[in-house]
Image (cartoon, rainbow, N blue to C red):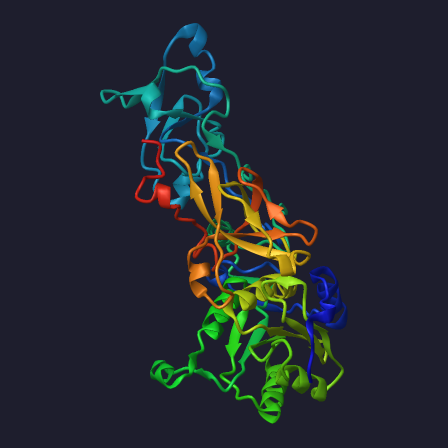
Length: 438
């Protein structure tokens, strides 16, 4: 099979073709709550209990009946009898009587009829007669966390589709929920192709190319929420490529091939796909710079994405086509990703040959002393991974836009795993400085 770049398909149309040709099948699984960080909820979480489960103290102090202290403003400080020995469950259930007070700690359940807490600093203790002098005039219910005041039974806690954070899991655990239903990670198979590829570093001396792209793509799959399945290097053989694709179809939800797609040469990957079944290759050549030799296909209603061999093209094609599919299988919006606004510090112009393509411009973001974000466009050969390592964000530039001007405000996309490792950007100008304001 040969193909030429005479009829590139727009990114928008290409995406529509692959979406219409495949079946997105999100699946659920049940996991322990403690394993849920970063996972996506399959169902709403509804509270089956009240938090707090009983009225409790919001401060270290003394619980009182408001009726005993409501006259402080007219009569001055009031003495109450200190009651000790509230240790066992039975004594803790005894109601507070008129003229009595109990010592309570923050979070401690209050006795029946105790409706107000007086902080320690508003009191003084008289050891002679075990009395507490209440000196502060307080409103009824002061420093009391009422039953269900934080969360009431049947409250909606977290929505389906919520990506779980550490504080969410803490709350779910507090509710006594040991297991949660979440979207299962889609399995994404990677098939690196090419006789020139090797996994052995010593083979580079013999003219081989180290297969680093698979590791990059595997990590992007994982940080996007998928489960990577690297099926290993496959030689330039239609028979072997077909067997590997069939294996991937039986074991994964999405298939990514790397390499084997170029202009004017026989494309063994595309031929293999079309020989396996219909509809086969849907798009071969996308108006994406860089990444124009990307191919899209569908087999057994599963997506197959032919990633270019050069690293920038492969990463760009992953961003535009693979990550949205992974997010859809996780019940997420396909294109809702973090971004920040920044000001360009120099002009950028599209490559003349591809000016009407969708462009991905990688940038290095910095933070000025005044707290403003700046973005410096970074360019280089499509095979250079150093272009990616020198950046921490990228700009999507639409087909009809061919230049960006110095000083212009732009939207910088932040891609987990590519722009940031764990949710935090280390800006060069802020390195070593504390995030605290002193």
